[in-house]
Picture 1 (cartoon, rainbow over the protein chains, first blue to last red):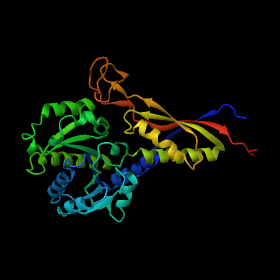
Picture 2: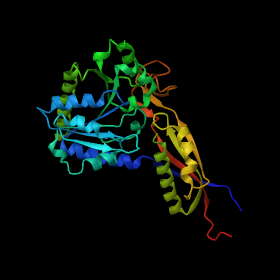
Picture 3: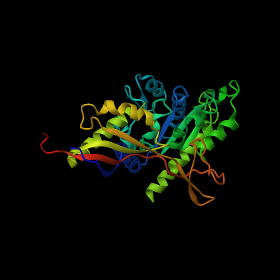
Picture 4: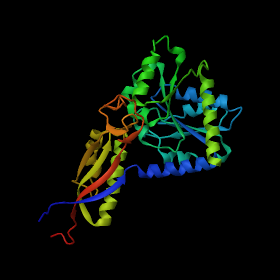
Length: 227
Length: 120
């Protein structure tokens, strides 16, 4: 005979395992004094070009390294290696985002104590990466001027999971009639107070402002972790 | 599309719970925040398939939508927002960055039957 089902309460975060791994990574990064930056954006918005430029400009002064996620190819790692910084590819196969455990595995054999900055380039995707903490200190979301000003309204969740927005390919802004005020307003609508940098990795315009910001954050991190 | 792997985690987690408690699960209650980054319909559409060949076969997934609630520094109050495209207080219009609720992705309850010790 069937009886009425009994309701039992459980309270389990579905992504708990990822959150625990991310927390362990964050503790490890903190202890090592390395500032960890992740990058998310849609495919083709210029993450790799931006990261190659960032690594190249930081390298004379800082110890930098990068992990780069991609579905199938190692092309991005090859491009980033031109910066002379240590780079490792994480090939995700069919998975559309990075998870904390993949970052942990990719770091195997690397001494994070030897680093000032570690960059993690996520798979090009504006949806799935938003749910997964990677243990980073700072998450950047990139939009290129060629994508249009309404990207933040179309993908509010990823903007909300990120800390800072970067508008890339500003050298093309005029050609595509990019409206900066509208883009800024849309970013602020989905993430009030979000800091935004405008830059071109190609011309180098705006890169120095961003690098100064990174340096400041590294200094702050080390001050708070030594207190 | 990461919903399939999320459903697999849910099923695995609930199966474990069911084994421990010695119960048959009829329904799984999930709370899903509007900012979780996970699509309800996609979860529902692969649930049945994932449950095949598991202890959860034949069970239902019941999803409760959790709206985003922000804290308005002007009103000094928590307010639900209607759209995740505009993080503003619906009462006074102040932009609000502090999120109180809306990122949930959690199993909160199970509807169960006790397992019969000797099925006849």
